Length: 367
Ligand code: GDP
Ligand code: MN
Image 1: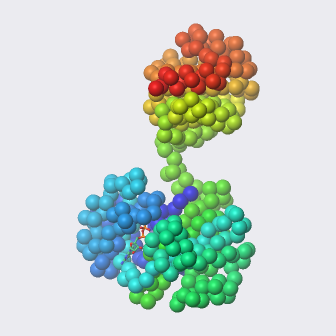
Image 2: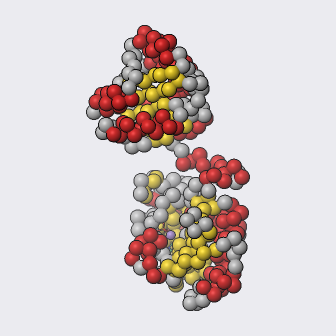
Image 3: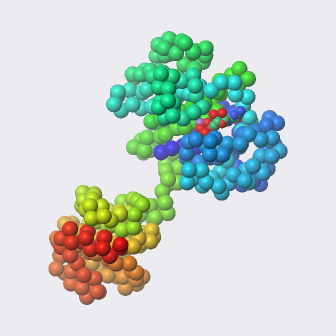
């Protein structure tokens, strides 16, 4: 899970890495009301979106303190790389003399934490890696952070000692908060001091159970439909196409996605009702996948613990109460299959037994 810049900076500050003084505003009025907290005559107004390269995209503006609320007004509601700006960070402007790049990443292939450092920060690391890889220093950190060794390896830099100290704090943060990335780009020299001018931190999703402070933030990555699915214990994922898919069990759902693609269709989403899905869950599942306005739905259920008649009743009931305006293709096999098919037939829904037939049919009907 990615943290926003200001969240990353708060974490860095709690591990004693220097950051600029700043405030967060959700509206221009809030910016106006809080701006007295800032002593500097000039500020940086920074879009708080989960995307890099904001500078080039107009998401970073250096303005007079008095202009900050107006700049905030102009920035809010705009989009950067498809992400709507809902919040800005207003900070005392740094006098940047030099920009370093410094990051720590959990490196799975080398089974260590890898420190990356460059004298030429400010640009995105991918860009730097492509254009001048020789300018990136790579240091593997095994288990413990050995400051003497890191400092020696950074010794060509004028600020080797201070950078090592900051890297040590980042390493502590990484361990304590289960981060998989801690990046400061740029790590700037302003008025002779090293300051984190930007922060990008990614927390390992698999560690959220022991990092409760971040758990509420996880919600914001989900769409409304995804939140609803989660509340009903349904596994739901959104995609870009126009065919909604409901199935039970990850394997069957993946196979369903594949065969739809094979016949030239594009899934809009998929929802795994899991084992033992009941009448209510099936109705909920149909409701959720329809929220994306697909051109058709394919329901593919292999009854085991899940009973076909339960699924059929849920689907039939939903159709009766709310109507389904797009074509439906159903494959219903296994436990109580005959009963399930009968219920569907009575409600004007036909079924097909072959995966291939179903896939071809839904692709055709949604073309
Ligand atoms: P990113 O483009 O999303 O990575 O956003 P950054 O926070 O890294 O800002 C991009 C660039 O804007 C930095 O590399 C700096 O050159 C510049 N910048 C950001 N904050 C300040 C500041 O307070 N003062 C000055 N002078 N430049 C800044
Ligand atoms: Mn940056």
